[in-house]
Length: 441
Ligand code: GLU
Image (cartoon, rainbow, N blue to C red; front, side, top):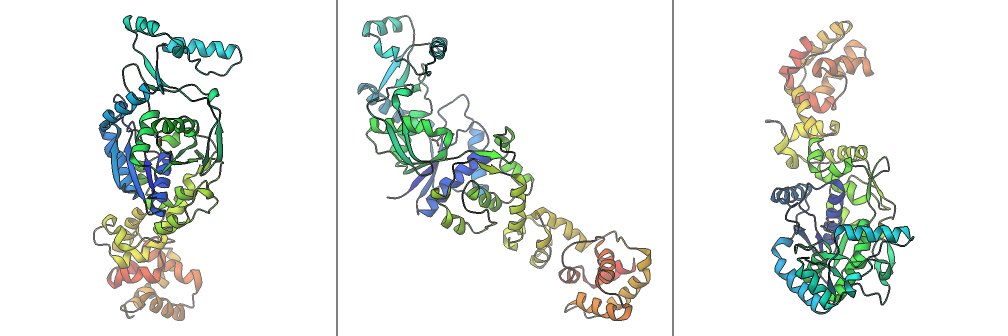
């Protein structure tokens, strides 16, 4: 069996961290099983779908490195849905219903008043041919419901949640098509999963009861169902489903200097029993990915944790992968020298300015003699080997200083700062000329 997963966003907005996580898990599973990962644009809702979002979804996935092996769009498949719908209707699996939204609402209220669950009473199924004809003659267009088979419990073994069981008699026959002919999510999705040969549906646990309904749709369509993995939802670090999380996405990540590798490393592991590790190498994430490692508790997304992972990712990025984002002129040696001091790649520019100058040296007047001596020594040492070692060894001997008293005034004069990359790596980049000028300033 060749694994086929799909990520099925509706193009009604930008991807957010929750659906990015779902996309990642679908991608990881396909990679792990040597399968394929599809992007399916769920754009049956013409009013709310926008082409501009389709483009942004593709771009966001590309930035994240989750490149689909194929793309499908529901809006190109209406003829197929129509054909399957007709067959289901002819076989009695779907039926027309004529209640207005207000009537349905009233029915729900009456049920609630009697302490009953808000399950649709199937009144439309009891209509005679004449009654239906009369309603249609009055101009009432029907919407369509899928008729659940109450014969047996709906059961499946969820890859994350374990055994699941639903009693169809406690569920309403789902509306699958509106009176204007437009489709609700449920049936087209099941038709597509069946026709495309999707083997694993990986999605949020908010879809669990939909799965129960869709399993009956697969049966009615005569298709074996895919396997299902419903993941616990993502919550903010404060433990709530914050509104804000719904707007955190690739744009915010980029703005904050977060690398796609960091997003992948974090989102692959939160909510699982595996620790979050700053893995740049996706092969390791793929190897360790397994639905059996997922817990039932909500996964916590913490921006501070993402930043921390990002920092550790940045420290591993090699020059070639960041070169295009570095300041003009900054090379491999400079990158390697400053990389351990970065939290985000963009900070490399700050250190590039320190190398290139001018820097505002922040020296203590009490160090004036010492720095004058340092300038003299800097003029005599061999700059081609390890000038920092040569400079500090000579100054240690001549001034008697050691430790902080030796290093800090030099660092301040040479970089204008109290902290920063290892001077051993930095000084050769600052070079003789600029160093002498800074020490004499
Ligand atoms: N378009 C649906 C959604 O975004 C897809 C759900 C699914 O994965 O089946 O909720």
